[in-house]
Image (cartoon, rainbow, N blue to C red; front, side, top):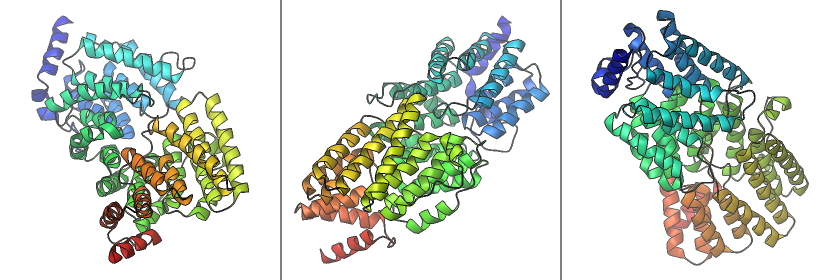
Length: 530
């Protein structure tokens, strides 16, 4: 046994040599360069490398198939069962796995333990994933994720030469990062670990993938550009690898790059949730460039959502895309009349954080088109959703629903002529939103509270305050078209013609050829006069 463990350690230490013949495993797909030595039948090692690469690229279906193919060739490969357990974790940064996936994952862990890891390293990997599934019917998801992080930290400490242990530990650090911690201690720690892997193995898909997640925050997003520009080339046959760069592109306002990579991702997706997620990001970027016709085409491509298909990710995109399309264009009556879609109310009730998007958009739309009564009804529903999320101990999404409720309440106050109260409510909502971060499922808030505060201040004759609000908002969400246009108007009305011209010129450059919105036509007219 000791000799076997020594040989595995040597294989890890010379990873560059080991991976040379297994860059893409046994398949023809290009999913990155992985070396994950296991003490199974040597003939299945290339297939195992490929299976891990598929998993680390979040290519769930092919990864499941690949690990099962390893087992078919070597039933005594305990680590193939470990791989299936990791696949069933799904996206550690998103919603908890379904009950079905939890059961399947726990069963895979049991199989891995029954066979037994053949080295101390394999046993450490199996022990780590066991913490995620341990007592899953009794222990809350956040507690199990925290336990998983601790187990992966031990794995990393015991096997510092293993780049894969480093990558999985870094991901767990991101999963336990609090959205309220704006020191970004855990993301920066994860980034440091991953940068070392990325430098040593620049084609390691996990290093590039998780680096993008680590830096998916406004103040540190610039550190993720290298990984974002590289990841799609590392694993061009993995749809998620094509999508992920847009997380950094969105943070920095690189809209065309986001559109290009998301359209490639959507085209190659093998599941509704994958395609919807990519389309949501692509629509967001198109709307920032004023390309409403292109955004409309993407909305038309929304595919039917099956309740069995990752309800959270798919449902969120189905809710957010029509909401964004109305709100980004300032079509308030259209927003007020948004329908909940073809899904049943019972289906949406399973994903209240997605339903709140529809309700939020309708509330703003109703209030800003003069229908205070409907807006109050939408606010009542938002508060009910907030209560549901609090009861479910979904703290992050409960807070998002509270922010949405405050925004709608502010616009109701505005509709009723209570301007000072409206400003106070919007400012409180913006301050609350600034103290947290967006969820990875979304490119950004459906309508940023600080941007909406700027629009309210403009409407109520306070252009200097509005300009400050728009400027602060663009620190977090750079390159947003509504913020740029609002800042241009605010500067113009404040008498700062030079600053207004700078904003108008930037808008004109961004939206060249886009003429559908009245605001863009007014930008052209202003620049022609000045």
